[in-house]
Image (cartoon, rainbow, N blue to C red):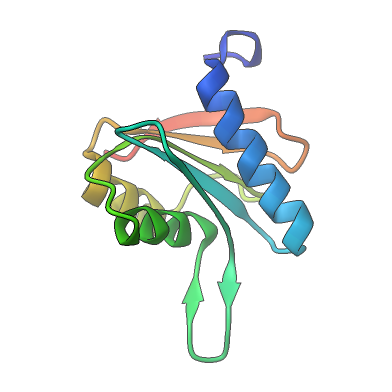
Length: 116
Protein backbone atom coordinates (compact mmCIF):
# COMPACT_ATOMS: atom_id res chain seq x y z
CA UNK A 1 0.00 0.00 0.00
CA UNK A 2 1.45 3.34 -0.99
CA UNK A 3 0.84 6.76 0.49
CA UNK A 4 -1.55 7.65 -2.36
CA UNK A 5 -3.65 4.48 -1.92
CA UNK A 6 -3.88 4.71 1.86
CA UNK A 7 -7.45 4.29 3.06
CA UNK A 8 -8.84 7.53 4.59
CA UNK A 9 -9.55 5.72 7.88
CA UNK A 10 -5.96 4.47 8.01
CA UNK A 11 -4.70 8.00 7.22
CA UNK A 12 -6.83 9.18 10.17
CA UNK A 13 -5.17 6.88 12.70
CA UNK A 14 -1.72 7.87 11.44
CA UNK A 15 -2.69 11.53 11.86
CA UNK A 16 -3.99 10.87 15.39
CA UNK A 17 -0.80 9.01 16.31
CA UNK A 18 1.35 11.80 14.90
CA UNK A 19 -0.63 14.43 16.82
CA UNK A 20 -0.24 12.62 20.15
CA UNK A 21 3.50 12.24 19.59
CA UNK A 22 3.92 15.95 18.83
CA UNK A 23 1.55 17.25 21.50
CA UNK A 24 3.07 15.17 24.30
CA UNK A 25 6.68 15.34 23.07
CA UNK A 26 7.08 11.57 23.39
CA UNK A 27 9.16 9.17 21.27
CA UNK A 28 6.12 7.40 19.81
CA UNK A 29 2.48 8.06 19.13
CA UNK A 30 -0.02 5.35 18.25
CA UNK A 31 -3.67 4.90 17.46
CA UNK A 32 -5.95 1.92 16.96
CA UNK A 33 -9.39 1.56 15.39
CA UNK A 34 -11.81 -0.95 16.91
CA UNK A 35 -14.50 -3.05 15.27
CA UNK A 36 -17.06 -0.23 15.57
CA UNK A 37 -14.77 2.41 14.06
CA UNK A 38 -13.91 4.10 17.36
CA UNK A 39 -10.32 5.26 17.67
CA UNK A 40 -7.97 5.36 20.63
CA UNK A 41 -4.74 7.36 20.54
CA UNK A 42 -1.88 7.30 23.01
CA UNK A 43 1.74 8.21 23.51
CA UNK A 44 4.64 6.46 25.15
CA UNK A 45 4.26 6.00 28.93
CA UNK A 46 7.58 6.36 30.74
CA UNK A 47 7.07 6.46 34.49
CA UNK A 48 9.45 5.07 37.07
CA UNK A 49 6.93 2.35 37.89
CA UNK A 50 5.33 1.83 34.46
CA UNK A 51 6.75 1.70 30.95
CA UNK A 52 4.53 1.09 27.94
CA UNK A 53 5.00 1.75 24.27
CA UNK A 54 2.48 4.02 22.61
CA UNK A 55 0.90 1.11 20.72
CA UNK A 56 0.49 -1.07 23.81
CA UNK A 57 -1.04 1.92 25.61
CA UNK A 58 -3.51 2.50 22.76
CA UNK A 59 -4.48 -1.20 22.78
CA UNK A 60 -4.95 -1.06 26.56
CA UNK A 61 -7.19 2.01 26.18
CA UNK A 62 -9.30 0.16 23.60
CA UNK A 63 -9.67 -2.88 25.87
CA UNK A 64 -10.51 -0.70 28.88
CA UNK A 65 -13.20 1.01 26.79
CA UNK A 66 -14.84 -2.27 25.82
CA UNK A 67 -13.41 -2.93 22.35
CA UNK A 68 -13.85 -6.53 21.28
CA UNK A 69 -11.53 -6.43 18.24
CA UNK A 70 -9.29 -4.15 16.20
CA UNK A 71 -9.52 -3.26 12.52
CA UNK A 72 -6.13 -1.54 12.29
CA UNK A 73 -3.30 0.03 14.27
CA UNK A 74 -0.75 2.74 13.52
CA UNK A 75 2.45 3.85 15.18
CA UNK A 76 4.46 6.98 14.45
CA UNK A 77 8.09 6.61 15.44
CA UNK A 78 11.71 7.03 14.43
CA UNK A 79 12.03 3.24 14.76
CA UNK A 80 12.58 1.19 11.65
CA UNK A 81 10.17 -1.59 12.63
CA UNK A 82 7.23 -2.38 14.89
CA UNK A 83 8.42 -4.43 17.87
CA UNK A 84 7.22 -7.98 18.40
CA UNK A 85 5.74 -6.94 21.77
CA UNK A 86 3.65 -4.25 20.08
CA UNK A 87 2.51 -6.62 17.35
CA UNK A 88 1.59 -9.19 20.02
CA UNK A 89 -0.68 -6.69 21.81
CA UNK A 90 -2.46 -5.90 18.52
CA UNK A 91 -2.69 -9.63 17.73
CA UNK A 92 -4.22 -10.40 21.14
CA UNK A 93 -7.16 -8.10 20.45
CA UNK A 94 -7.37 -7.96 16.66
CA UNK A 95 -5.98 -11.27 15.48
CA UNK A 96 -2.93 -12.10 13.37
CA UNK A 97 -4.19 -10.46 10.16
CA UNK A 98 -4.70 -7.02 11.73
CA UNK A 99 -2.66 -4.45 9.78
CA UNK A 100 -0.12 -2.38 11.69
CA UNK A 101 0.99 0.79 9.90
CA UNK A 102 4.40 2.27 10.69
CA UNK A 103 4.89 5.93 9.82
CA UNK A 104 7.76 8.31 10.36
CA UNK A 105 7.48 11.52 12.38
CA UNK A 106 6.47 13.34 9.18
CA UNK A 107 3.46 11.02 8.87
CA UNK A 108 4.78 9.27 5.77
CA UNK A 109 3.94 5.58 5.69
CA UNK A 110 7.13 3.48 5.97
CA UNK A 111 5.71 -0.02 6.22
CA UNK A 112 2.59 -2.06 6.74
CA UNK A 113 2.91 -5.37 8.57
CA UNK A 114 0.39 -7.71 10.10
CA UNK A 115 0.11 -8.37 13.80
CA UNK A 116 0.85 -11.97 12.76
